[in-house]
Length: 237
Image (cartoon, rainbow, N blue to C red; front, side, top):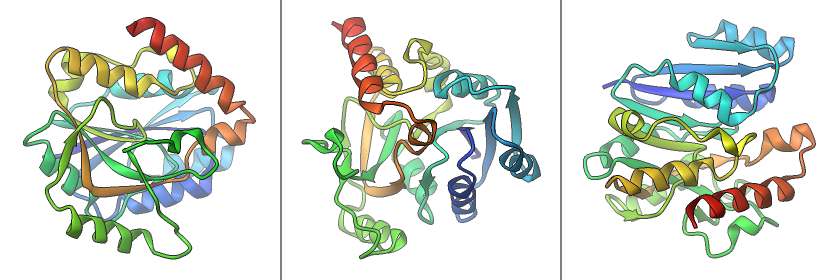
């Protein structure tokens, strides 16, 4: 079964190359890239790939970009992805195996130090890339927690795998979240509301540079998170 991987890209060429290279050791997939107005060098790289590329003249933001790409999904499984992640070998196969029991699954991700997101966050795990390789840590978790999945309210949209039927039933991301943040929580909330199960695959791991695009754009991340958190809470109050 093929996985459609949908990923918006706005520059970050070096990290994008790392992301694409990490797809080499994954099960069969089809890459759908939304070029969100990237510079010429990044644009040329994206167009050189064996991928379906949608080109925007300007940066329309993560959520609108994702929704554009989701319109072209055609396979039985869909991965929502960011271009600042590195997938360890075999990650997609490991995640997909958990879709026998869940409708949406996501892996553990590394904590981002000095971030408020770390506080009591079961989706994040301590990991120091200077001490252990991504592959070694991924395999350590796989052996220690093999088969363990925890039901959760949400998983992060930077690496979120689902059955195509979820997308068909839930619909696209809510564009009220603009540049991004809380759009993944909102999507999972809508899925759970119609009886679907969201799982955190504790035997899987993805490395995330985290907010790299926002940082490159000079966006005040704290303001963006607080604004979208209010939108989310008002919507679901």
